[in-house]
Amino acid sequence: AQSVTQLDSQVPVFEEAPVELRCNYSSSVSVYLFWYVQYPNQGLQLLLKYLSGSTLVKGINGFEAEFNKSQTSFHLRKPSVHISDTAEYFCAVIQDTGNQFYFGTGTSLTVIP
Amino acid sequence: DGGITQSPKYLFRKEGQNVTLSCEQNLNHDAMYWYRQDPGQGLRLIYYSQIVNDFQKGDIAEGYSVSREKKESFPLTVTSAQKNPTAFYLCASRYSGAPPRGTDTQYFGPGTRLTVL
Image (cartoon, rainbow over all chains, first blue to last red; front, side, top):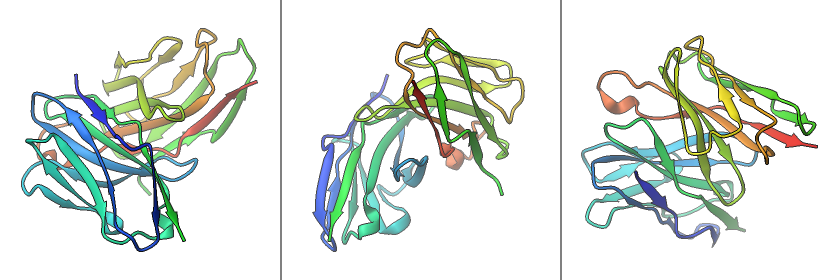
């Protein structure tokens, strides 16, 4: 089974500063990787995904993530955050031949004005 | 509009009562999922279904039951056997057919917040 680790449970950052949310996974087989965002009392919305090809993936709202197979990481970055980026962010993985997704415990991003 | 709907948004239940949460999708997705979300614990899989009339237990299936009589619908029943049912419940679906695999994404409903009084 896979597992996903989001090392930072809370990340405060000032508005317009850069941010990186870390995600590491454990798997001995090929996987697909996802980042989702959740606003309070809402469902999850897909930010970006890595299936294959270029290891640098661009998503919505100016976010991007880089897949690093050797370090089994898929860190999420944004060069300049906005107040509206305040939310919970989840990393998820699924084996390329699997049916079950595995989620990290989430990172709460708070953007400070 | 295509999407996933969950109802109700807020649900209150007395201890000892069963309650059913609704999940409907019109995305023509094959697979549907139920997750439970608690603060600091992320999403935990309760049940999932790949096709009609078939479903599998997830990591925390005890005290829950599901049915999949139609492709569009995957209701979740929280039974009185679930000792701590107060949580936020999320339904999701995805296309799990043949490649291209660009449709591996799970799409989520808006969630139902269940509170046991």
